Image (tube, rainbow, N blue to C red; front, top):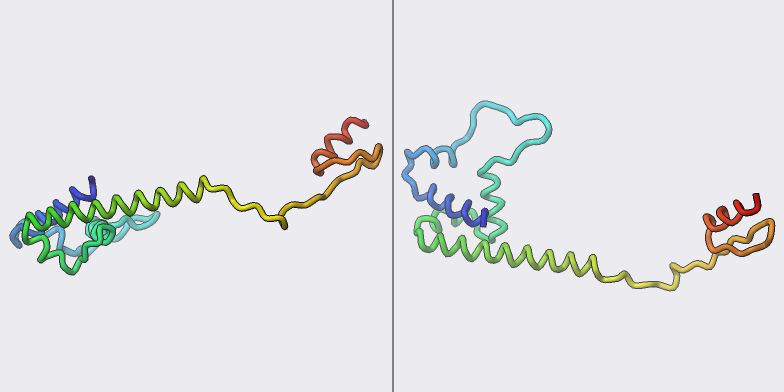
Length: 137
């Protein structure tokens, strides 16, 4: 829903005249300044390009597609539908991978036993042997 609103706003700004401030900010470049320490933040323009790519809208066709309001609205709706379908499919695949039990192979099983040196009792693990040896103290 947020992506759809961002894309619709982008189309609105593109249809504005050249002298309007939102359009100048969208297409403008900074001459001075630097990014803060601790990792660069993604500018709004780059975030919009990422949203366009996720919705499978080519950034090259942005100007022509956004010039027609009804067609742009349809682009945004269809793009966000595809985005949601892809997200749902990835989430479903991840859930299947997480909930599907791993295949058991015969080579993984080991039959190592640990005999007690005092009473020759057979323990199945080292920690079991350690716990058993505490009874002899």
